Image (tube, rainbow, N blue to C red; front, side, top):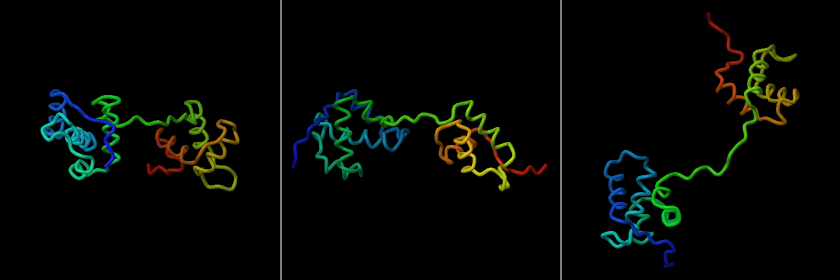
Length: 158
């Protein structure tokens, strides 16, 4: 069995905090699972720190998750081990406010020759043709129109 790289040694206050998280049950399941993992892994605890396979069975999770929680707790602290990881990717917006306004104006206008109404793909293609954006996906057009509560092609009942 490989030797553990990261050993968890919790103070009394940290143990009490983790036990409170589990006792109250008001936090997310992921946060409760991580608290349970840290309590079972604590070598200062009453059981003296369980093995990863024992913790995996008790917490109903995988051994890599246990190893990751241990590592994050040792390297970044208890709070970081309980929280979700921030996303690594950051996306630049394809359409700024001006681009959104042009998209809405385009979608409210008359449909192109040979079409009854604008489709998302036609709108995306037209935005590229007008050089509003270099490239854009029809899904981005859909999300933008949904966000702005624009409903192209809907016929009013009143």
